[in-house]
Image 1 (cartoon, each protein chain N blue to C red):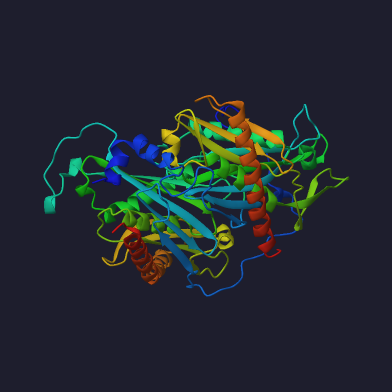
Image 2 (tube, rainbow over the protein chains, first blue to last red):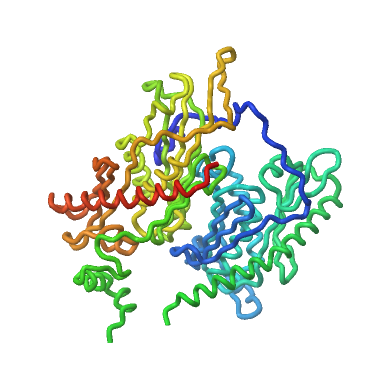
Length: 272
Length: 278
């Protein structure tokens, strides 16, 4: 792109061939509204990161790595009343710094590598959803860095990133109250809209509204909620949240299995 | 009692020298031996071509997206190939998020040089209509795990991804002068040469070892990367400063690079043959 002297220059602008395609996109196939796509989760696969996790749900592929705790950037803050359980006072608590990044080849159109405001919004959503689960009081004046990389966007990308980030934090040995499980929903357009659980990319593109729910399964508390679009009545959104929470609960055993397997692998590989 | 774990932290160079005296390295490899190489082609369905390469622990993924652009004014019948190497913070704690650092820029320029010098694709093949429309191939390489020898992994990933790229058929409608794309009919790229990179690390100004890990790169006094194609022609030589090398040593490196090329080509042909046709 013009002006970016740190990268190899290409043409000033380019258009994807899909704009000129002669045939229409296929409509998404009808399906059971509460089906969850099969999930493959694996923790502890990167050697250079403290904790890592890879999650694949249908076509969506997300890789997440955690590093730290490291000295927090930013000035000293004043002390306040100490928290329960020997934790640092509220002002000295640790921080969670999240980054959400889409690979340039992850979507239909190529995206610039540096990312834009959408990635920053999603990174903030990640941070807000993960903070309730992490015992930040145990990491005073330190910061934990979570980076999520979306390799392929097959729908429900934020939900997959949330789940992968929680798995990576658990794999890194960070003290947590509970895991965080994410689930995406999409509202079908048209006269009789229904909420679809775990939408694919085609369904998400055509949806009238979208919602991502993050749940802490054991504590049964909602950690994060991000939604937008024309959803209609309040009851419709409440129904969507209920569906999302059920979806998260159904996903939880898979993640437990994944962490147990990772711990076994680490135990077997450790020197005697 | 000899305690290797303490020795490697306190005096890493001495620790390495003990192994090098026996002509081997701490991970059990010989000086001329590569780490286990695996490649996985075509896993990203949103990309036009993709490949994931693992060289020991070093993991690089390459995704190629093809778009339309106007050919450059000084070369109206050529397309573009735009490489970009990304070293995100998740691959190693030494990288920070933000614009590409020095190492990423060096790697991107190296890949651009390899593409240009080896003529892996003739840019004329990418032209659809001279002066009006051409293909631009954005090759984005992302390192997922950094354990040394990033240049070899990137070159291999790029080659495998380009071999996987399928471009849809395009024709220019004479009446409307617009392009018409048929996404159902796709064809592979014409890959003319297969450049393969072999990297070396120089130790104590004299010893050469192939495929350095992250720690070996850190302790090395110099580095060298040789890129060969299948006819034993040298496409690119990358020697960023460091200790000097005699002509004889350089010849040794080039012969090792020729052997490595055969190994890599065999692996890639096997993988492509085993893939089910789309």
